[in-house]
Image (cartoon, rainbow, N blue to C red; front, side):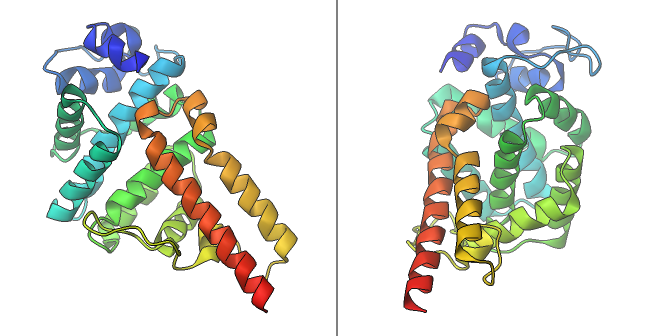
Length: 261
């Protein structure tokens, strides 16, 4: 947890500047000017793995708060899901405090989304697999109450656009997560998925070899080790493991369907 060690050590300003550095610092009770450490929107350079991890953590919880407020109110389900994710990440007390503060900042009226997303995209080196994992977490958060409000849907599309995704990309992600059978914070994950074809982003009439290619590509994109090497915080490995489990289950269901047909 080297990136967090730098934060705790008081060197987060040198780890990550800009709007994300200011948010992270404020979540721990520190004041950090957005221009510190080359943080101006045109001044900072994409960082190394530790810096990307700090950016991912900061953006994840602040944007999660923003989406939770998109429909006009933050439901108990959305708060429960945020806490569930924090629990799955096994955050320490100080990390949990920071995550909660970031979530609360994101749902505040004066939260400035665009600069946060602009810096986050640059810090991720525009790596599509890492950015997609971020979007998937946000879509899960939007489904926390079991449905996707039109205003949440609009917010997700705007976030995806600012991160460089096309409109049909976010639609596919939404359908994949919807098809996986969203589990609320109090429910237990089931073995099967609601629509295994949509989970893999394929159609039921595709040849099995083509579906297998899509499965392998998706599994590779969500491989936890690969995501961590690109900047996913190590604390989020469990979330990546859950996604790969869902992908494998979808493929297994499709195989069984083809065997019985």
